[in-house]
Length: 468
Image 1 (cartoon, one colour):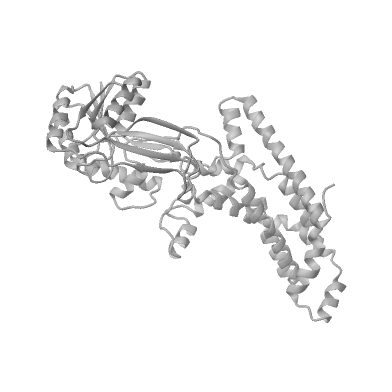
Image 2 (cartoon, helix red, strand yellow):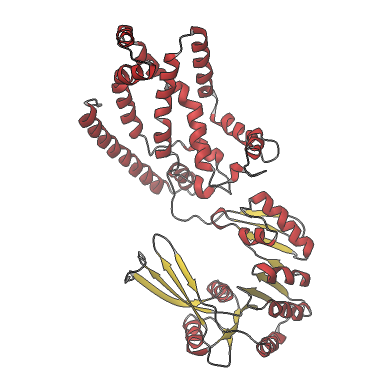
């Protein structure tokens, strides 16, 4: 038998609406269901066919509604009635463009209520498991439960945070399950990364926890066992995906080669000009595997010189940038710009070499400086080339090659690093859903074709230059 304890269950009222503060809002859909961490565990176990019973407290008519809903779902329960005129809490969850939750406090628990719950737990046997989940109204309440359960020899699981988690460690729970944020809060650490989380999980074991399971949201979870073995699991696949690097690469990457070409073209020293061109061309010939390896080395939390540079400039120390979902788009886009800006500038340099130098000489006679000559001579000369390349780039904006993304992708940044190309690769070859992956690829190419036509028409109307 797996018992779950929810000391403060709730009636969850979930609505979907585009919430506008200060106005009357109408819901698009709504649902009412029993809530509370322990109750959620029992409902999940019951769906998997496990023998379970939800224990806890309920008060008033709202408490009775929670019992009725559990009966309707076929979940066994013993929710003790709290005396007085209080009511069990109602949690309102508003789903929309921005999700909002308003959680009630619920009725207060007294010493007599603890005694009644401890009486229920006298039936717990050594082969049973007890799961205590949720916000602890009273830390002493949780500690008393664990002390009684310690005498039975049963397995105990604790899913809470703060002082309650800390105080219960002395009772050596079989498993504790904080999330990454809660784990960091225990030790006063913000923005916790995976490697730091493992170190703090080891500290929890030294304080008394036997096994530590840490959830990391969309990045998955890791388990540190009693035998000091470390396991990691990805989050289950959800809805796809993002197009990171598509528009960003176009917006940031398109003007950089133009600026580089204009600067190189303005250099008068021939030797320095050739050296600059050679240095900026060279990264293009670095393979994708080597480039990602360089990023991993330069951004190593312990020895990476870029990490040390960022720390010297006031940034966080020993941050694992390659495992950061926030850092992934920046690393992908700017490393791509660095690698290809020199190569992409060749065509602009070729167009600039065709500019008649007599135009520059005439402009200099009229008193035009270097900047004005660039604006009124060089840029108009390469404008048709710029337009053609912009149209071609827009036609491939959705087609990000999967190699670099796949190599940079890991379990910590997958929430930001899963793009259409890697998703198609995993669905097609990994799960052998060939027709589905082919349909995604076809739809993706269709969007590229539509973008190509739209951008071509816009450019033709504005500048007169186009592919057709």
